[in-house]
Length: 359
Image (cartoon, rainbow, N blue to C red):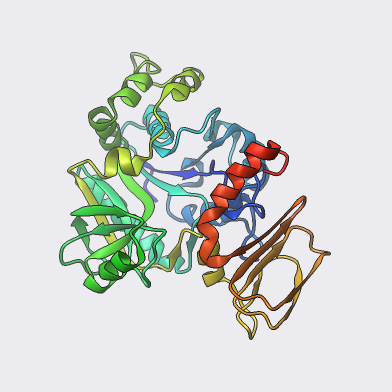
């Protein structure tokens, strides 16, 4: 493994789409959603420990999750956990990580990944990541890993390239975020589009240069934290982070920069970002019901997904089809699978009516 290669795992999200199974104090990255004996965060760490040196892996998270990280990843010392006081989306998060790593190694290459994605073909992913790192080492570019779509998914972003085939690296033509069903099907049929995995690779100097060009407010705030020798004072970061605009790295830079490339790949990827994607990945009974946690008896019921935070609780279903049934502590959710986009509305309205007790 190259000594100048680093990984940043972003593990600060709140997983509101999976409410109430995931709560503000128990987001999905710290849960074993698929019953494999490792949380999503632990699985992500294991994946990248074979790509970069273990002591080059950093965790970016919210300060309320630091104890979760330290409990689940005992090999990661506190100084490699970048804990935000306020969530400002991924652009400020990436900026802090880039400046921090540059303080350690000005020639560093970094790969940035969410903590809660699934990869089924680990060796193919490893080869793709290493190929991407080799590419950005030679080309001053911003690279994203694109995944060959297997269905017309409306909850993913799409990247258009010209004449793409698996294993190639191509300049990006367009980004499209969450198209409707008809447009998503056109994208899949065309063969020119790949899912945006949200996994990025670049040299620290390249991403800081892009932040300077496209996100000058974030750049100027972080520059005030850097001393004359180029080292960032993390104790000054929190005040500057809290004043940064709330913006994603995709919208802030990747959709605007002119040196963006995509590595077209297929390694069995899912962001496990919706109940639908989780249902798609889960084992099912003869009637296509998926029981993720707890126990259930299903009568005249098909294509449901069922979870309970109490493994001793038995769920009885009769006459339901295509529903999400999620029982968690003091909340029970029963919602049609094709209406799951309303869950965020349920969360917001619940918070407005009852405060944080049920969030």
